[in-house]
Length: 256
Image (cartoon, rainbow, N blue to C red; front, top):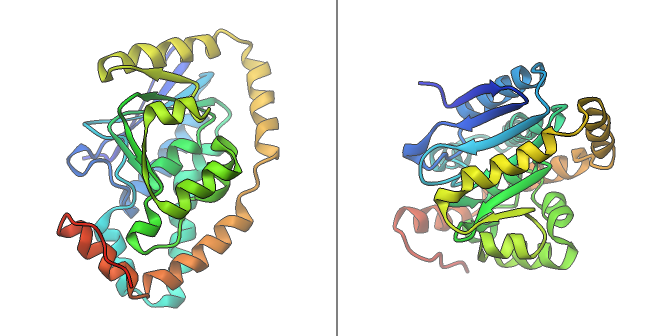
C-alpha cells in the first residue's frame, strides 16, 4: 500500500500522507515515496499544491521504529541518514506551485516542520502542535529552527523549541504561523479549498516567478548540516533512551 498519494483537479494538486494507522509518522519508506511524489507534482501544470494527511492526525513526527533503529546505527552513518531523510521531505520547498499545509489533529516534531516547510498553512483550532525534540532527548531536525523562526518570529521560536511545549492550532493562527483557521475539523476542507481557490485565481506565470523568488531567501543547507551532526550525537546519548521509553510507557520523561 502506498504511503503517499497524489491527485490533480484543475489548478490544484493534492499530496496526501497515507499512513493513518501510525498517525502518519514519518519513516524512511515514506520519505522515499514522498520525494518521488514531489517530483511528479512539480511536473503538473497546477498552480497550488495542498499537503494533507489521512486519518486523525497530520503527522506524529519521526517514526518511533526509525528513531530506535537510528539509536543502533553507527554514529558515523547517522548524519548522512538524517540529511537524506530531511532532504526527501523538505523537497516540497522546491516545487513551482504555491504550497498549502492542511493541518488537523496532531502535528509534532518533524511533522510540524513539514507543515512549516510549506508556503501557507490552514489549521484546525484544536490541533495539537509542538516541537517536541527536547522532550525526546533529541536535537531538533528538519530545519526546525529556521522554519520556526521564519513562521513565528525569533523569540516565539526559541520558547517553543527550548521548552518543547505543546500549543494549539488557534495559537499558531494568532501568532501568524497560519493564514486561516477552521473552528471545527469538518470545516477544514472548505477553509483550505477557499484559500487554494484564491491563490489559484492569480496569474500562473506570476505565481511561479514569485515562488522562485521566495526560495532565494531560504537556504537551509547550513542548518541541515548542523542538525544532522547534532542528531548523530544525540541518537547515541543516554537521554534519547529515556525519551523513547517515556513515549512507549505513555509517561513524562525524567532526564538527569
